Amino acid sequence: MAYNPSKFAEMKSWYVMRDLKRSNANVKAWQILSELGFEVFTPMHWKILDRGGRKIRKFQPVISDLLFVHTDRNHLDPIVKKVDTLQYRILKNNNSSPMTVRDADMQQFIKAVNCSSSIKYYSPSEVSSLHIGKHIRIIGGCLDGFEGKLLTTRGSKIKRLIIELPGLLVAGIEVNPEFIEILDSPL
Image 1 (tube, rainbow, N blue to C red):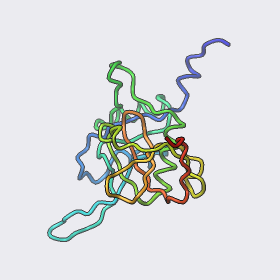
Image 2 (image 1 turned 30 degrees about the vertical axis):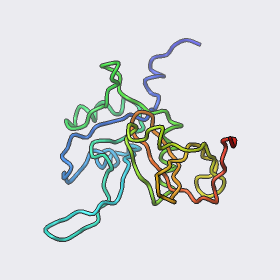
Image 3 (image 1 turned 135 degrees about the vertical axis):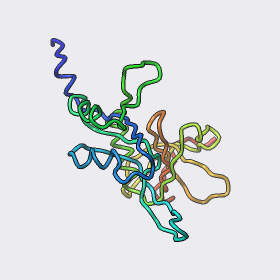
Image 4 (image 1 turned 90 degrees about the vertical axis):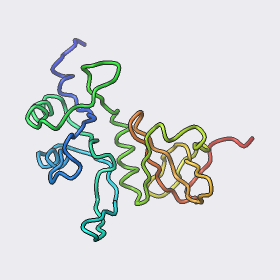
């Protein structure tokens, strides 16, 4: 089979992007891209904000400048050139290659995050080997079939499954203990 560069240029990937707009901007890059028909994912959470002495609850991105776009470069490059606050995140070891996330990892992360109402987000450096518990599989519920490690927090009875976007973000998804099957063999 011969190499066809146009075939590879048209392949969709999950691109890791930066939105350099201020955190209080009215319209974010993820909103613009969604309106243009792109498949966009931004990890979101509820936050309590103080506005003039009144507390309001607002659904906002976990990391204000992080978003993921599922498309090909031919469609995304013109938008990046037009919107000056939108940038590709670049791999550290290669100055010209944009960061991407494998489709399987991204789909698993999105499914897990959308499946739970109790999510805690962590940077990869926050989740050390001291916090990681047993290897488990989820049996039943909307996370059925997911495998991973338990996040153990001292003094907490809440069980969380760790779902990771390698090198970018870790989500601790609350799971019901009755759905947990421990895969580690007892010592």
